[in-house]
Image (tube, rainbow, N blue to C red):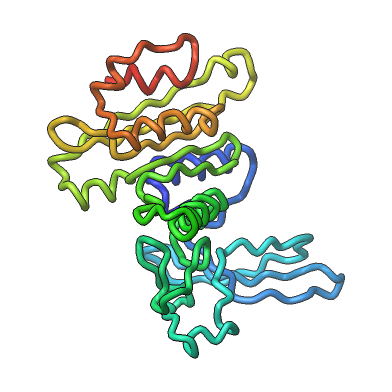
Length: 259
């Protein structure tokens, strides 16, 4: 499935939506090599390892375009950081504490090179907090990396913040986690030929059912997320959502009417 590090609901639904639009998703497959074909196009050799089956190899011939989207690695190797006492982890990420301090006094790092929450707004926010601490005397100024909202601009878009169901159970215990799910067709698609559904999951923990995670995919979920991210950051509970009057007819109202 795609987006394997996301909540299982998002991963499975996004995979299904891609397939519904005609995308051929090769699962359990890795690219082994890429060669140029006699006609100038590309031949891609892949290895498939399906659980319970023997590995198989196949060549996808005459590929017009290959988009290499396998993630990023920090380009810190040529900076000679070890010579000034700045520690990096085995993957090359600069090691920092909660205040963006490296292991060398007076040297700081923010952004993707730190290897946490690789998002542009996160880097900007961390940089601002660091500047406030260094130049405005705000000694406790630091970025809180918990509950950072994330959007994937897929079709339809994905919005997620907080813990996945699996993470919540690992931290709080299975018996202390309650999940609320919903799946529906947004009003926008009421008269369209292809019905694109919207899925939502609320992850709650403890007796007070504190909301520790929210995951959704559907039309408008990218815009819906920001406000709910504020509520979750402030410690909202399921009861807080239940006590909020729904805006009808919207997709967002589903989150305050979950039962």
